[in-house]
Length: 302
Image (cartoon, rainbow, N blue to C red; front, side, top):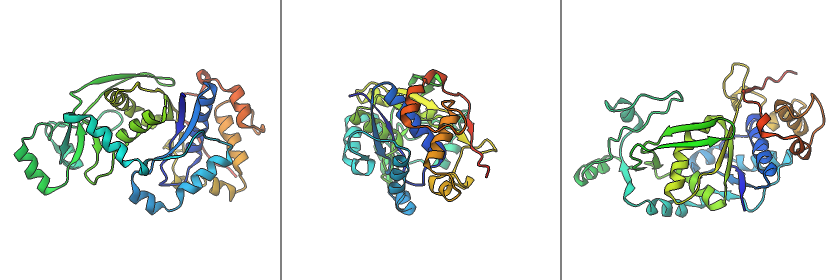
C-alpha cells in the first residue's frame, strides 16, 4: 500500500515547526488516500541517550494533536543489519574514506560550497591503492562512501518544482560506525513502502542524492514535498532556544494542544483566527496547490 510518513529524531522535543510539518505530512498522505507511518530516526544513539526520554514525549505530542499512524512503529536503531545488507548489495561502488571534514574543506581540489553550504566531496580517497588504504586505516577508521561518478539527478517536488543536483560520493557510514542519514532514510522508505516524503524545506538539497540512491538500490524515488519552515521573528529556523515552542512549554503558558492545532491551521490558511478545528476539518479544506510558499513566523505574544 502506498504510504507517507513522519520521521522525527528523538534528540530534542518537537517544536511547533516540527508539529506543523507532521500535520502537513498527515494531510498530504490522507488527501491522496495513502497510509501514514511513523519512524523514529535514532541512529545516533549517543545523542539520543543524552537527550533522555524524548521519544516518549514526541509520541505523546503527536497523539495530543490527534495524529494516528498506520502499522508498527519503526526504529532505525533496530535495523542495523538491513543497512549493512544494502551497502553490501552496492558492491565495489562503495569505498573507504579517511578524510576529516577539515581535510575535505582544505583540499586543493575541493569544490566551493553551494548556496546551502554543502561542499561536495573532492574524491581524495576514491582511487587509493591497497597499500595507501592500509596506511590510512592504521591512522583512523574509514567512513564508507559510494562512487557516484558525478551523476546529476532531478526530482519533481510538489512545492519547490523541479530541483536538480549533482550527486557527489556521499557518506553511507560514518567513521565511528554510525549509518548515515542519506542511506538509512532511503533503505527504510523502500522497506516501508513510502512513496511520498513530506518534510521541511531545509532537507530539499538532499532529495537528488536520495533519489539517486533509491534507484541504485532498485527502487523508484518517492514523490517529494518540501514544505516551508517555521522561523523565529529574526527569520532564523525555529529551535528550542527560541523559548516557548514545545507543547510542554506552551501548556505552561496556557496554550494547549488545541491552541497549537489552531495556530497550525491558521498558518496554512485553512481556518479563520480562533476558529475551532479538527484534523478531519483540515483534511476537508486541504489543497496542496494552495499551500503557502513563504516561511511562517512564530512569535508568541502573551
